[in-house]
Length: 71
Image (cartoon, rainbow, N blue to C red; front, side, top):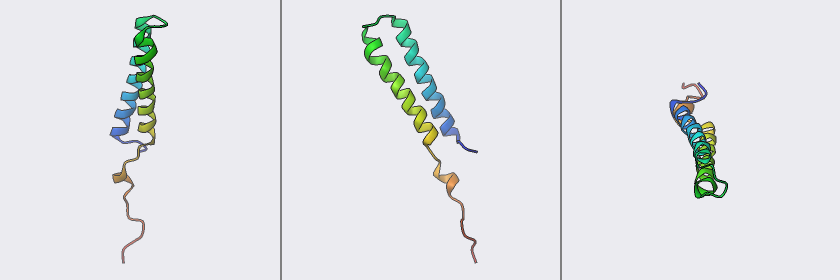
């Protein structure tokens, strides 16, 4: 498989963080509010970073396989 269970969990967490960030931005509904300007963009950016890490993370246990036959 391309991804492991950890990759899928991180991907789900990142997507959830992005959705929560946009939701709390919409709930406040003010252009110059503290949550809309400072908290929500940080949560959204962290969500995107988690998604990127989930896509790029490789499991080293899966990659270990014998490359040359033993004699």
